[in-house]
Image (tube, rainbow, N blue to C red; front, side, top):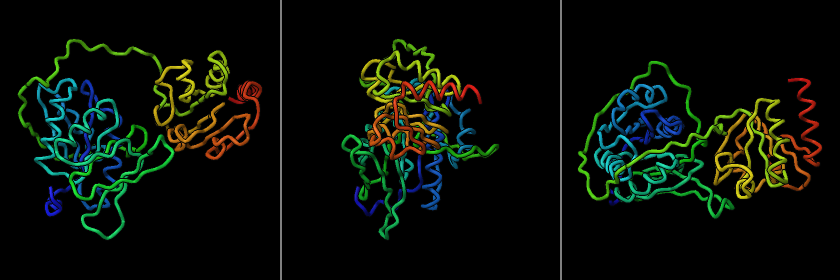
Length: 339
């Protein structure tokens, strides 16, 4: 694709992920960011809904910011499989020519995004944390895509000046969804490029769902998070007691997961989940950039650490220097009196 053809690419498109005919939260988060980008570009927002029997989800996408919804509905799309989904999304891009395409960096999106970008011959910036329209006077105006690089030790801002669409995957929990507008409507476009199973269509023999009763830490309003400094898996009882008093949920750093103390789904950070609670307790967490990247947007951060020079204090709103084995039980007892 040469630069001369870039002007025909218009609009901000979002892959509206659904599983079992239920929209994933990342779809609404991406629509919120897409609405902002589209405002800067004076264009509109289109959700691409791929699945089987999913037309009933279009109204909800409209409520969260979609001006248009392109529905690709086919029995071959009932469950996520790489080949038919990649064919569906790349066909939509080739047919409708969006300027920007956003995909969630979920298990599905991490598989789908790179394959689609290769098929439509454009670049893909993965795991973005910031997306904004460039403010310098060149045409066409580029999307600036920012992501952590080199293990989170530096931040890279990437542009895709010569090809369209400009594609990015975005981690769940990073972008803010808009408040839904009840009764909002969107133009619905039904499109089907045709699906012919080939040797790349895997056969799904069985689906086994994880019946874990673990609370999703991304939904928690209060997180009591522990790091290596907690000392042992048994010592997490101190954090559980504190969480119980204040209606919080226990989470942890990567070091805790690597040690086998808590499961991966409770991990906060660059290789875990991005969280945005009202209150975040960082207990025995040093505050490496890989961890703070996943929690620095919390409304209030309270750090407890015996090392006064720990980097966690640089992002904390309140800090307590001392032994967590003494401080956390005392804090729990005092909170019991007022909660």
